[in-house]
Image (tube, rainbow, N blue to C red; front, side, top):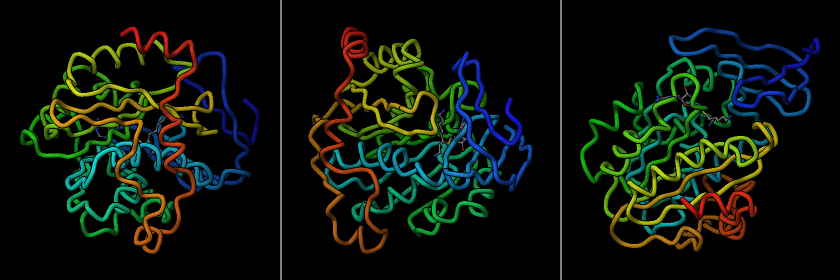
Length: 292
Ligand code: AAT
């Protein structure tokens, strides 16, 4: 451990630790679920850390939040009801709110401290909560989806932390079954699905569960986020039985949408080309994912 630096260590990425220089610790607390830290870094702006793991930095959060949101929402026309699981910082809400077709945005985050801390230290991220379409539920996403009415949502976005801690069940089969039930026919789900470099074992399990459950299409996409382990993170994108969804060909463009740019500013990362490119996989991963 280098004094004055934060190093991200976890059994999920043994033998390596990405480090950021700390200027100042702004918040340190312990919620019912996890340790919460906010610090000012020297080069990535403010950083939110849960149980020692970086959740977002001001500098690169756009890459993650824009991709996890617009990959599913730009793949279907006229999304109306959207559910976010996790995502307590509000960044995904901010991105969902760009879509004018959306009339209802439910969010189920387990940890109220994440919501409060984000509103205090990350106003440009938590701005998502200011949209009147947002309906916040503090609770466990697994329980929430178990009780959700069948066929309710056009899209579910699972912005979850890693499977060590409160998010463990969000990576398991019963959870994906509940998601499938809560989606309308031809509805879509996008879940945080870890790193191609570090977690092919986890990805393999998610892919085989999803192929059994989601009878539409099942795809893996990825993006570059410098402050996530190994610098990349992926997403599992699936659709339910019903009208076919071709995730690789976005039908609902947002990057040139004038009203979205006017109300929310231009997108920093997502565009239609990077959408399609996100589904191109390195050969080692393609072989495994296609064979599942
Ligand atoms: N958008 C920032 C990125 C995140 S945040 C993940 C959120 O999921 C956290 O706020 C956490 O409190 C919440 N969460 C964890 N478990 C549950 C649950 N069971 N139900 C609802 N919300 C939950 C993800 C960062 C990825 C990091 C990659 N290494």
